[in-house]
Image (cartoon, rainbow, N blue to C red; front, side, top):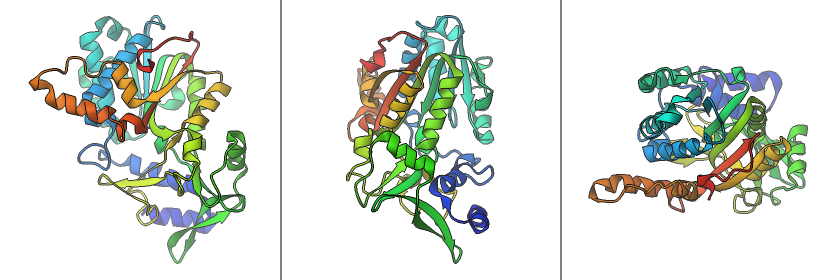
Length: 355
């Protein structure tokens, strides 16, 4: 059905950008991948996230939030954007209630989730924290004091795709005989400006992504934050790595059943489409917005600095130690995922996770 909807849009208005195609595939109100009524993450889904690997991940994030609370007096708001089934919220709240009850009492957890089915799952999962959690719309938030938290959000936002071919060309999606196909055209003004601003192009013959939606989200987050922090946890690299011959076809991948593929067009809405985050672009935009960049590190270093192995000695902790290793080991989640921490209205604080 989604394929027909996209085909009709192309038939009416001509070829569309890949960003528009990806937006429909992921966020169409009825048929979008992220709007489905069933969970997409974990063993029975299409991919793992750190909270589905182990509650240790959320517990370490909770430790970092507790330290942030030392610089923010009074009520401390945690705004998690794109929390899915609520695993991370459950682990953060459970840890703080048990280990840091004073901080927990002044904590307010705001979960921003566009999928109503996931909101229902969260309400059920988090019913033990009644009075601590609410589910506002992103557009309703302002004057946030605390921390805006995103874990694997930016990689799921629509991207434009380009190819360096005697200059910069943008990849558009057309329709022929009922099937989608890619065609090259002049880049939109916004995409062209993005690469001028970045000061870097992919090598000749190579493809890359322009994460304009991620930059817009960061601008909105900066405007909504009055005082505190923005924590972005996601997979990605700096621009000089992404826009190199290491990724001749860019980083866009489709996920289904814990396998990746590059057939983006045969069954729209049934695959997760993701692209690596360009952290150079995110940092540069943050600085332009007046945010302070506290640090960029790998997930492995972040979790180790927060003490992920503390208390995991002994035979009875083997399972937890294996989970912790999976979260931190190089070659996997440990170095593919990065942690970027930004602040607004605070001093240049030294955070434990960035040591």
